[in-house]
Image (cartoon, rainbow, N blue to C red; front, side, top):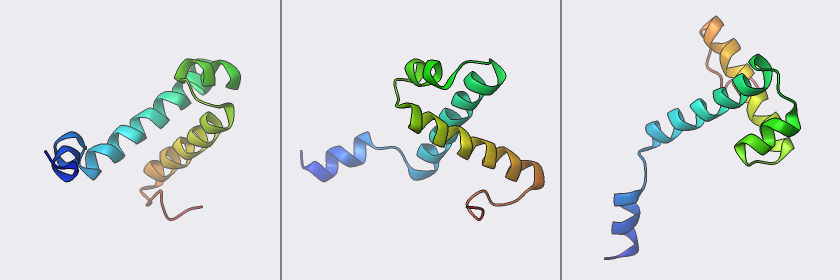
Length: 77
């Protein structure tokens, strides 16, 4: 099999990948904010660096706020 064939059979469509990433960001936000864990605990739980979970939680908060106001979350930086 060629590399392109393998990639086509194993990769997710973009919309599914984006949905999966949004769900991961939301899970990080819930674990930290709603369940009250520290950033260090959150990073360890998800196997990520502390800065990474902070960035993803910040993005999830922006996405939530945009959903509440029905905006495009990509438009606010």
